[in-house]
Image (cartoon, helix red, strand yellow):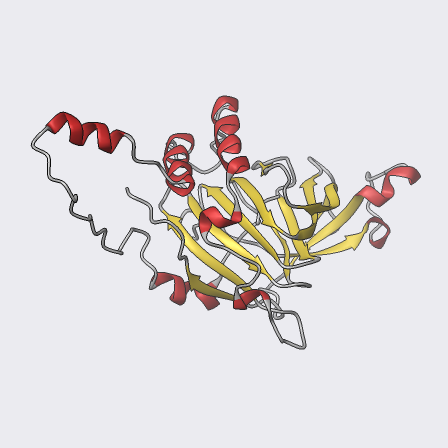
Length: 281
């Protein structure tokens, strides 16, 4: 599903104030009974339970070790990360539908909240919180592999892949084929999109309050040329292009995607501090 995913200029200032690294101090409680036995201390430390978020972080470091644009992880690594995400629950990241951000009183399109967990040059981890009727408009994920886990709620997802080598009606409009156009209700499998397939362009519409855990590898980066582009979608019949023919029974699967010159005006994303288990680098 791929809480596709982006936080643009209006929230970058907020996110810049949230450290990519753990800043909360870790306070170790003194043992009630001191022991001079190093072996006992080692046995006790081995019993420490690794949080699901820490496990996700460690897995992402392995899966996205390459860190280069367009580098798709091996199938073994994809299966590894998907398995970790499939096991994560909302309570593991301290997210609940009772949080204020899911009770928007806006008359227009409700704002979306982004909980920043971690970001480096190789990957990013974060949670998008959408109130009922919240929308993340149609956008792309250039040269990225994206894993999305719906933590709770029901969401409609529509995603597209480009039709390769198709003639274009204009330089900013291309033909795309719908990959997914369905409702998803948690719990459900983690969805994955790739640089060239799997639904690289997608949009989310919340049917109920929803939370989506997104992992992007590598993350958006303007300096690296991985810009987020938003699109308008138009029915196939909107344009008549020489050399483009689709059977009548297939036309509903194809649409023309036109680049938006600016970020959607009705998209409001606010940043909020992630309060779940800390990550130890």
